[in-house]
Length: 277
Image (tube, rainbow, N blue to C red; front, side, top):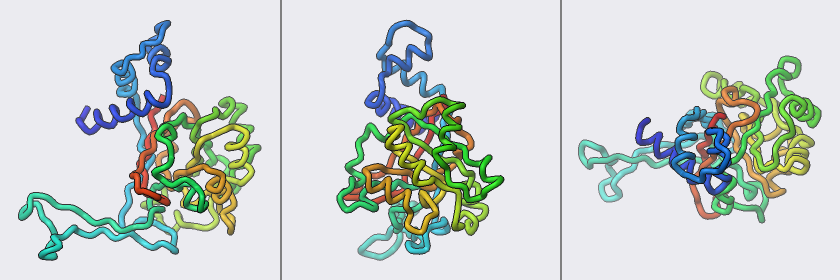
């Protein structure tokens, strides 16, 4: 395992300790009767799991809402000379990145739509690692390419996988992410497969999820963005433009989502990944 991988795993362990009981995980994996409470046990268990990146890389060519426009990547320059820093001359190089917060795989905090909502720096750390459930909408898209997930669809899912656990992150798989690089125009299509408002309300109010995510650039395809507006103005947050949900099981995985901490931040590119059971 590389040093970078070890650092990622170690970071997950630290957050995991804050979010759940390590002893229960260790006991379940080892078959032992009592809790261990050992960080080394937790590290060993997590390091043995498969990780799935749920994040797209982005560039100035990345699909984005026309009202925002593309990002700009530029070499950082010495303010005195105006010349870009180079490894050959200065021993280092760096970039300036200019983009809207809602760019690539990103987080929408409540404050994106709610003037009194929480900003990025106010979302609790414990909400950055959650049990993950995935609703696979792709079978429905053969009959309705713009299907919006319904409460009835969730009921069918629960008959197969059990009740959606409270405190979880609910993700919607549509396989739109396959068009991200290959067919950006199709990725940006309108309408698109999405969440219905009733489904979003049901998951938050009746099942007690903490956050949701999807592969599209918006929660829903209604003109008023009804589902997106409702969840953000009710104190919830979401991850948009997710990737690789086809590699994650319906239940049993954990999602880890991280983002920078700008004071009063209204959105930012995020890094999300799943740890598989």
